[in-house]
Every structure is written in C-alpha cells, then in structure tokens.
Length: 403
Ligand code: AMP
Ligand code: MG
Image 1: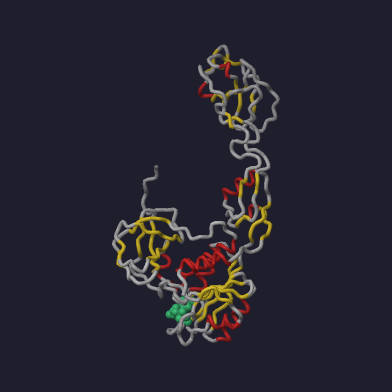
Image 2: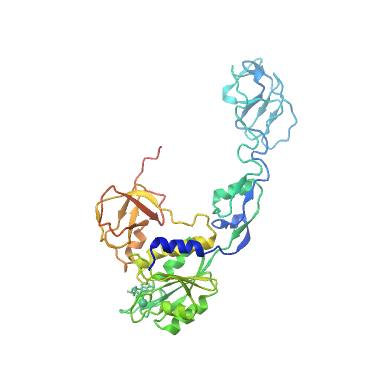
C-alpha cells in the first residue's frame, strides 16, 4: 500500500505528455501550448495617444496653439509639432514627431487666440510609449500554458495565427458490474444505472480530454479482457468497479493478464483503498472502485493528476485553496479520509450526508478535504485545505465586492 503523496509522486515521475499538433489559435482554446512564443515586435508598435486631445511641446504650457491638423487612429502622418503648432489628436493615433505630451480636450479652452493649454505640462503625459505593453523578444506564452481567451489576446496582438499544442489525450472509459444498465436501457428492480461511466466521460471532457465510452462489462474475466482490448488504443483507460476482494471482482486480474505493469495497487485513502494505477505499453490505466462517491474522489485525486501530466500542463499538482471549516464537524479518525463539501468563497461546509456509495452529494460538491488519521474533529473556523473541483463564479446573495 502506498500513501496518497507517494502515489502522486509516482504519477508525476512516470506519466509524460502526449504528442503535439498544430492548430489555428481560435481552435486552440483550452489546449496546452507546446512551445515558447516570443514577441516579434513591440506593443504598442509606436508612441500613441491615450486620450482625445492635443499633441504639443512642453514650451506650450500656459500658452495657446493653432492646431495644424487632426491626426486620427490609423493615419499615417508626417506632420511635425513645434511650439504654437500642435495637432489635434485622437486616442490610438501616432504621436507626431516633436510632441512632448498630449493634453486631453477637457483640460483645454478655446479662446480668440487659439486653444489655451494648462499652465504645467509633464513630458510623456497621456502618451502610450512604444513597447510599454509587450517588448519585442519577450516570452508571451510558455510551453505548458493553457490557452485561454486572454492568452489568445496576446497571440493575435502579435499576428500569430497557428500554434503547436499538445493534442487532447484520448480516454476510454468503461464500467464493470453485472448489475449495471446504461441510462438508455430499461432497468429492472434488482439492477442499477451505470452512473460512473457517463459521469467520468463528462468530467474527462471538462478536463480537456477526448473521452469515449467503450462499454459495460459483465463480471467475468473474458468480458473485461475483451473490453480492455478495444480500449488499448487510448492514452488512458479509466474503469470503475470490480477492484476489491469480492468473488466477482476481476478487473485488476484482467488487466494483469494483458500485461499491465502496476504503479500502485492500493492507496492509504478512505474511501477508495483499492484504486490501482498502471500501464500496458503506452496506455495508462486507472482502476477506480465502483462506489460512485469513492470513484469520484479517487478520479479527482489520481485520474485528474494523470490527465494533467498527459495534457502537458506545467502546473500538474493539485492546488488546494486554504479556507476555514464552516461549522463544527465530527470526523471518524484512523484514516486519510476524503470529505466532500460546499465552498462559497469564504468557508468550506462539509456535506453532512455523504458515503462512498452515494450519487446525490456529488453534484453539491465544490471540492473536498483530506483529513489525516489523527483528526477526529474539525472546529468551525479551523483552517482547512480544500481541493477545488469547480468553484462557482456566482453567489446567491450580493456580496461585498470592493477591496
Ligand atoms: P464494486 O466496486 O464493483 O464492488 O461496486 C461497489 C458498489 O458500487 C456496488 O454497490 C455497485 O453496484 C456500485 N457500482 C459499481 N459500478 C457502478 C457504476 N458504474 N455506476 C454506479 N454504481 C456502481
Ligand atoms: Mg462490481
């Protein structure tokens, strides 16, 4: 049996990123960049006006000017500014040679002699300097960065159209269990729906994988081995069920018969002790328990870490949020225990009614904490490390917004 930390270290040491592909940037959203990108030119490309106003010299302070012309954004102008002969200039327009500052329209006055300037002018006022935003040669995106909408803003500002990214890992998911029916089938009184497979397909997609369902198997060696064979062309196989010591638990043995090299086959965690990780050739394998909440907790800790590595993420470690326990909570000691809860941005509220076999609490869970064996009580206000799954951007009531 390995500890949770040892299991995660083994994953980090052994799982490598998948291969790369080239995508147009507008299709690269959510992918992980596989190359460093450097700025080909300064941004702004030229000194330009930050305001609608007048481009003048410092010597114009307190005096009037007779604007020679108006320069608009996008104009190619060769006008030169001298004392008394500024230009009217619009936001984004090239600041003409000779201009020291831009004076906003609202700080000027029209008079009979011309446009009256304020008494004091500061060099560079209201001028956005060439290169102050992005400097030529600067690294604008790193290999391992996730391509977000705002990463795309940087790339397009440099005229970059295509990008090398890690392709999506392919994930095959199947469940084992004689009692299971798919959600598109009718279910008898003694059967249940296979809720794990569709859940993990959806979650793997949320995490940036190309996930597919390869079936539900009976609790027989032949049936499981057949399912493994049709899943082996994936980067990752995730299974649920049949991993404990019951008379119908054949999952691990079926993988072993097909040559699985085991990384670990038991973890010191509750629930989910029988969780197993290994590989057959290039395909990584995660065998999760069948109990839905146990499977989800172990998916979030181990499968998600493997997915992050495969995707080429440069921050693949689980990143907890430090928060406080919402209320006094009794904990059964003796094990590293996963407890699901709600997080509202201020505190973590452990869900009262939760158990490894439950489906209901999963939707309520914003994240989970892992308590240590010596913990038997979490006092309200105690600092806890919450591993987030999703954190809602909305709140039920209006909140204080200002810092
Ligand atoms: P197992 O790990 O196969 O012993 O299953 C443990 C429990 O989880 C049993 O009550 C199963 O009926 C249930 N279970 C197994 N697989 C699934 C699944 N795919 N969806 C929902 N429940 C499941
Ligand atoms: Mg089973």
